[in-house]
Image 1: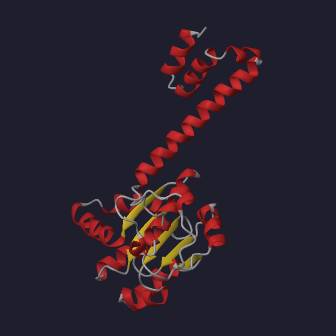
Image 2 (image 1 turned 135 degrees about the horizontal axis):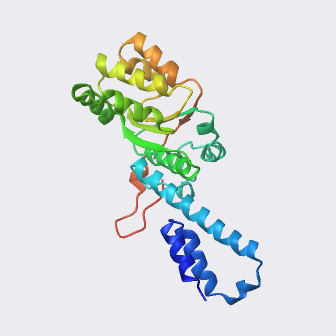
Image 3 (image 1 turned 135 degrees about the vertical axis):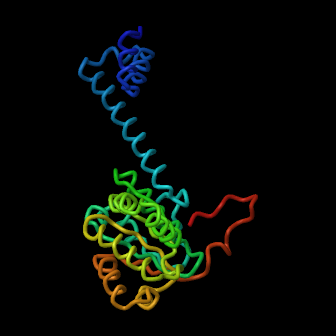
Length: 251
């Protein structure tokens, strides 16, 4: 029979995984054959699993990923130049541990954002923090933060994120202030965190797109070095999406 005071005390201590496991053990008399250490081990393991799941859910929620992308749903069959072996190695997370970057380029519709979100999702499940940002919108937010006094706090928050996605690189028209903000952000993260960029522009065109040669050199020096380039090609996946009455095709 369940020991109610113990169950209540575990709940009060917020050991909800152990409390639930204890209640389940009471419903399975065959577990009485286990030793005290074995039953305690099951309780501790359940608590650890539930804490890990809660922490992962919190990281994923705070990441604000644009798409619910998981590694299992990635389509390697579509001819877009995605190297299966390389991408699976990236999903393992060594690039995050090594504070390296990833640059995903290709035409619109080939799944750049989906792949970026899948990599960030995998990182969150491995215990890292992540954050999705469209670069044009982020640069506007930084400009507003200059005016209302939040700039240093916002920059510090962005600098601490383990995996920062900068989506739609190259779409924003950059003035001097935005280029300097971008340089400061990448400088804060250089060799301490990982940045994941998606862009329709090939990397070779980024220097010209940034506008100022001196700042462009500094920005790309902090981003392109120690980076894994993923160059995609092919027809837009949106052209082969099924009708609304059918199941969606993974990216």
